Image (tube, rainbow, N blue to C red; front, top):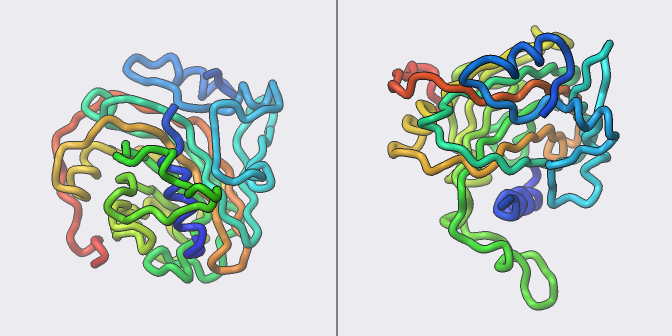
Length: 260
């Protein structure tokens, strides 16, 4: 995301202090023991409204909308030289639900995207796990209504799982926009374009490795497809976001995969 939107993103994350399914596979998964639905976008498809998701961007529906294939609804993200994160409040303990699953499909990667740098930090698809922040939303604007940059120390901790244009799978970096965000690459490049890819990550384990301490309760889950820094275009779809029970036993991450 662009430098100016780095502050917008963090202000939005701080402000986010608050299912039904779209196909037989979603229905089966929603009924599995130990799983909880976050979003399958069926309600949005039926109602025509993306209820429960908020953004600091007034026109986030310029980027996000609902698509349909057969009888299945999903989220479409179309970012052309734009950035807009949406998030849904979702309070839960990572010790109870350490696993996050979802599926996504990339259509077009942001040209030159590289999450290591501010001037190229665009991802075709990203899922945020957002933790609480100590700052109150009222602190985000001054008396003239002008947005105030948030000190890095007061930004929320986040894990951001991305489909990167260029970084290899398994890469873990500190976000150039915030020392409180770790970016974890789970898909990379164009080899799997236009295919639905299911993902499963152990957020609890990833948090321990990223921050070296026990996590607070999750506050919200966010979605971001952006292409503003690269002045290009990114197209992706999202569906079937669930949390589920599982092991919290730590596992090692290959050091040769960790970006410094």
